[in-house]
Image 1: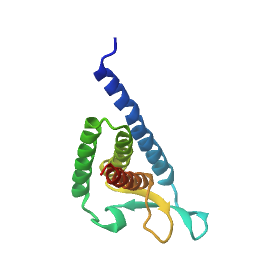
Image 2: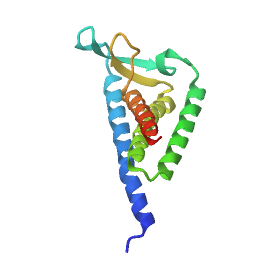
Image 3: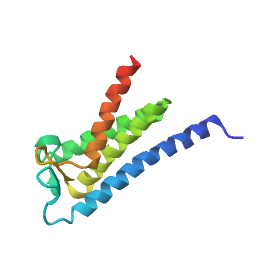
Length: 150
């Protein structure tokens, strides 16, 4: 006989596979693009693959504040993971699993390399990566989710 708690943990584990897949794809693309010696145009003057070592946070803020960014990332991870474990709402679990993937994708870079590896270059926006996209989308989904809950 399967207990309710076992089902809950199997369910959570399966959803956390989303987190693992996001981390794997993010790290794979970062690995591949970090070997580039020059920018590669995908759509000339619109979208390029350009490897950049980001020593700060978004839009060039907090340059050189490695410890601060690592601590903030660890706190964001801990809070997100806590709520992931506590919630029983499927859509919220998915959103939080996606957010965890983005947080961990950039946190791995900060801890291993001392910077975040960015590579998606739209030329009119700072260079970013898959983890950044995932974080942005999950935050927008959280805003939408809580807006709809009210």
